Image (cartoon, rainbow, N blue to C red):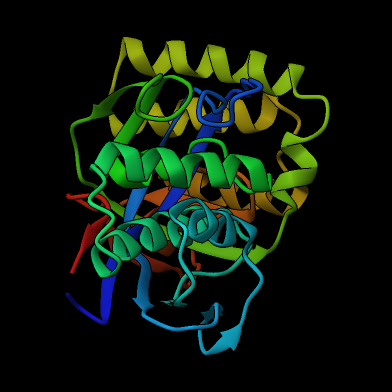
Length: 275
């Protein structure tokens, strides 16, 4: 028995996606691709009589975390820390849900399998309207390609077998729920085409290209991000928009070469894990 446990969950930047809805939230989700980041979220679950959720030292209301705790039938304190920007396309909600599931399973000895825990966290993130594919990608690590939507019992995941350096700059926030809760026909059409491009050539450069075309063709690309992506392209680099946030990400030193002052890290190798 232990009084606390900590999980690390990588941040996740989605390059492109589709939207698939189902009455069962664990079957809902998205096809698409993204990169998991060595920059991520540390989630500690502590035994406690009253439920408490904190993010970076402040009380936080995270619906997906609440759902995970209710599903596992526990009260407890969830304390999360991250250097990633909040609400800017890094999958923070999904990371907190998955980290909570992994650490709670350890502390409260629920004896569930990894896939069961990922399913719980994925369903919670979908129900909250804060993500469709972040959790399954964060569980996998690397540069996952989500060939089929849903949690572990439904999806099919492949990957781009590289670990490039990733740079990113955030200008602000976007409301994920507002986008994925509205009319998504154009998004899904652009996402299907982007997935076909990447599957035909699963390389980092093709991922960036497919993501850039998706951002433009889906109608999600903002003027500020369009300018930053153009700057990187003119400097000889590859960049696109993080879905969904006012964030631009680039391969290698693309943003640095274009004169920006980005944060940088490698692609995460292992996926979510207890530490």
